[in-house]
Amino acid sequence: IPVNEPDLPTKIATAKAAGRLPDVCRFGLEYVAGFALDGLLDTKAATMAIADMGYATFYKGALDLVRSPVEGIWAAVPIDGWVQGIWYRKD
Image 1 (tube, helix red, strand yellow):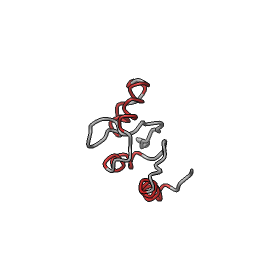
Image 2: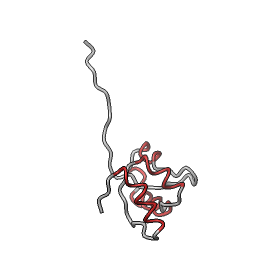
Image 3: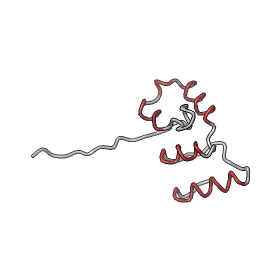
């Protein structure tokens, strides 16, 4: 079900209160720490998925960004990314 990103925390909180959290959810990395602290993420499943796919499948930086701030294991599985940079002319 598509959700506007600014509405995501409210929708997730409502789903949790109703006992209807989604099995899978795609969201930005900025939500991982908060959702993990709130107990909304299955850290064991995320850690098993990453282990099953192989740690070398992922960039270390991506894995560092989805590590649970409480448990120190992975709280989510990174699925995509893009290069961000600044290019400039020297002249």
